[in-house]
Length: 232
Image (cartoon, rainbow, N blue to C red; front, side, top):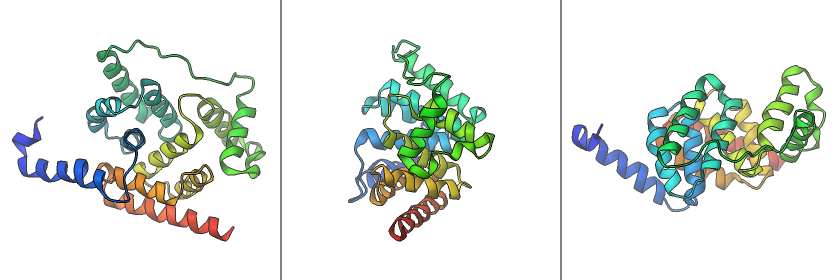
């Protein structure tokens, strides 16, 4: 659908806001690869599959590699569930194939079924601190968090830990209703160098895709995480 023909007034204002005003806002700009990574993670979080199909070619053209895109989608399963992620994985495979990318891509796993728990727990420590080392013992879901969420995905190559925490922040902010986890992961981002100013830029660049309420909630969570760090 060509909205410039069917909805010209809307297209004029939306395109100006999303692709010019937001992108060029002084003090809120992000490097292009980072911006597009945040946007595709946000579109996963808000279930914007049609916009995702429009955005992904732009992201690839601006420097996101197929591996980076796949890693964003894979990690989304832990925060959104396969029920919500499968259409996005199908879309990625379709678009990459159309662009001549041979699938499957090179493997990025660094853990085995034997050491995924140990290495996942270490990733939690690296992000959130030493207090997480024994957290996996607090019930089976905590164990799954360590071996599956962190051991199976955060330990993969293709994205570094700071990038992985940023996309997790985007998944949580975009789906809404996850404010306790969003505050915790805002803190995890800050531990890895993604400071308050950086996270505010991420929210700003993703606002056209999730709207004002969830964006304002995300800013509140960033502020709460920053305040907690100051008091610690």
